[in-house]
Image (cartoon, rainbow, N blue to C red):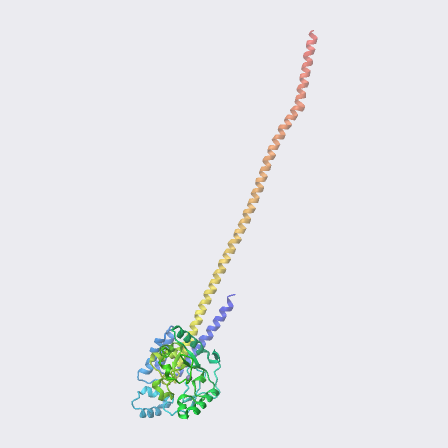
Length: 418
Ligand SMILES: [Zn+2]
């Protein structure tokens, strides 16, 4: 009965180990820099790695001055962008150029290669395939939909905000290419093209199409959403300090309006997963384009996060396996105890039967002995009776006869003397 689960666990372990090894091996092959190898080896050797160590491992990537995010195909563009921005730090030049920020908005648009990734970068330089719709949207509130990973964290965040006596009202979540198209056209009609461009994404360029963005306010919206009110609320302050714990970042910060190309949007928050959001928060990087250009464009961090997730899965599997073994052990122990009890019980029954048998024998013997004694008593009584009868029947008549003869003799003698 233990064989089937053990075999299943073994096979699952082999599969996960293989997947993990392949992921790690391909990650090592794809990048030759020592820092990255160090990062991977460190993750492998220390399974219980926490995020602060993880951040520490990433530091050399941006702070040694070795520009690990240098991409040789961008070399001339780095030079050109640096020439236009002579005071910009070199590593920031690299990060910006890596995500096409050296180009004009909506020129040389790149179609995103990973539309389903939690880390997808979509902006005025990167767009979705026209009909892209995530396949894991879930309804989170009335008709509002969001991707599954984000949904759970929004609900957690909302619950914790309410506990802190703050409120969260979801205004907008997933929007299709079609509905973004309508919103953009209406914006152009209402505010004119130039202004509308700073307020609305063109269709295919909205983060809402990713199913990973939410617009939220502290109270049910009245009038224009673009009220600056929200930035002065306790809710916004709380989000700035805590949203990363739920995997959310402020996507269009005030100090980078020229770079992301939108007005400051305190209501627009983007889900990128807790790991990356935490690294961004700890690194003090508030513009997703910068973070993406430094860490994600080369795939280094994404691979590292994938490896960590694989290791977590293996850890979970190991825990499950240990629990299963423990459970089987307990089951086996219980069976052994039950068996011992059954044996003891059987022994007790056999002993009781034996005792009963012996008692029966003893009873029989006792009965037999009593019968013999009784017979003996009866025999002696019989003898006495017989003796008496013999005495009565034979001796007494003989005595009487003798007495008669003697009497006759005496009488004869007496008569003869007379
Ligand atoms: Zn939004």
